[in-house]
Image 1 (cartoon, rainbow, N blue to C red):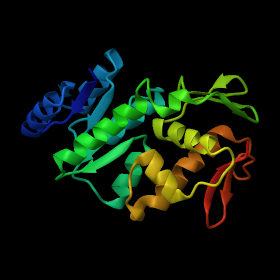
Image 2 (image 1 turned 30 degrees about the vertical axis):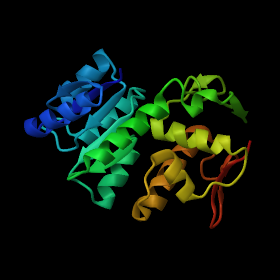
Image 3 (image 1 turned 90 degrees about the vertical axis):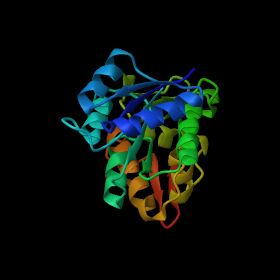
Image 4 (image 1 turned 60 degrees about the vertical axis):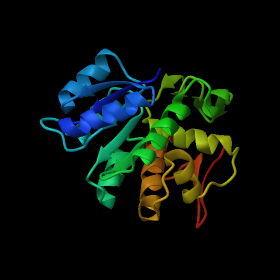
Length: 229
């Protein structure tokens, strides 16, 4: 049974979401603010976090930042009324795995929850991929780890998924649209370019010797990106 932590300060909404998720067979815990959410995740990491952005004390962006800076790769689904392009991009940039805006469809929310849990499950596609190496980088999809010259590299879940998506293509070009659909399962063209490019820039910063002149994570003009193995 997958465990979900719902970080939501609206008690009525939290009650309804908890009932819906429990009806679907999930074990659900609720945290009423960002600090409590961080404490619960640190004490006993859930399989998925459903996170509101507008929280008292410590907002959702700060919760995300703290988790990712500490190397926590727990999948996070943002659920919020803040649906402007800048909010969406910032959420992904801070390490969110998906983003659902209020008001939302319960059917859509459940589908996204299932997708995130499926992608991180032991039977997921990434876990069947072999260890891949390029330059001084080693990517292990099964363990979710990346080494650079033998030292661990901390990637956000989306950065790791993006890297694996490029690795799987064995040097073939992936368009931004393809990457957005595969990694984010998100089809809003308004945030397409910015979202993918921000994450590629972060991968280059963490994995390339000279991010401004990358040797491995290459831009293919007017087409997308590819990984030079």
